[in-house]
Length: 425
Image (tube, rainbow, N blue to C red):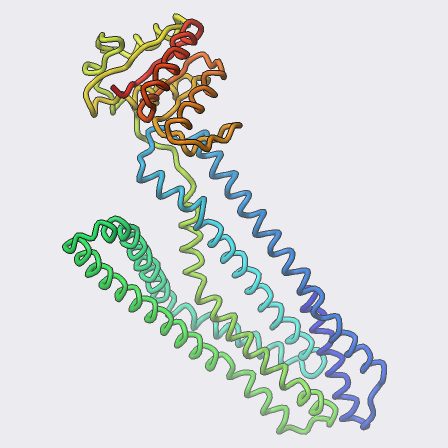
């Protein structure tokens, strides 16, 4: 805003110089000095704006991350599916920052363009002829009315373009396995579908861009009719030489205003796309899962120390006992891991260690082999002395010697706390 005010002041002094020269062929040195001074400092606020935009981008992403993690901690069930998790994670680590930046820059550019048009219009109108303000208001009314005509078509075109890109990206995610296996039938099928999706995205993108360009150009031409008519009337009427000179020196700026109006219309045509991306960003925040872990359990087929569980109350009785080591067994698909997750949900102070702990954060950084790392992780967990410890196939990647060592440590710890384990046999 400060920068656009400085631009408006420089235009004011330029107009005054033109009027003075047209009136008596003299120029006030003070106006020249002020005009040159404004030209020197006019870009300083722009640098400050760039810094503030980056600051806003960082703060916006930080707020998004905090909201994402809050929802993740307080509203997302452990029963969240792997597909849902993957869909949400990509936003946190990649897509969200891009869209936040795009929305922020869009708002800044649109606001700057509006000021870049509005302030010079006011200066020219107040300095030369107030009918300029009325004419530009008519331009805005005409442009607004005309933009409503293709609004639905542009929104549909933007949505189709986004959907086409999403389908292409989804298909690209399958490339790795299909190509690395080098099975001809898989590669050929993948490539055929890819070329079709790529062509579909190209067509939708170019169609959307063509519609936007045609709409913008048509609206600009029609909406500028009042301005062109007013300039003609002023130049052809019996006005003072000072007014004519002031109008002539501002004609380059009027051309810039026309260009800015065109840019504003282009930005407004992009608004459906920005809104669509904003909706995607809002929907990327994890929602509360309706999945119940109990639905995944077949308690009649799950055993604890060889005895069928049958009822969940048996788990509560074991935990109330305060100590002991209990082995959970059962056929594949009966919900052994889901049972551990359900215990974790109901007893928040328990500790669940998945079979793969590569992404869990610990104070110690483990850099050895898979088995050595798993052994180190187990030892660190065993030191925590939580009341309930849930181990999911803790011995899957350990050699026999390490299994024996860790097994002894678990048995000793089970004298103090309750330990449930799903073992890899």
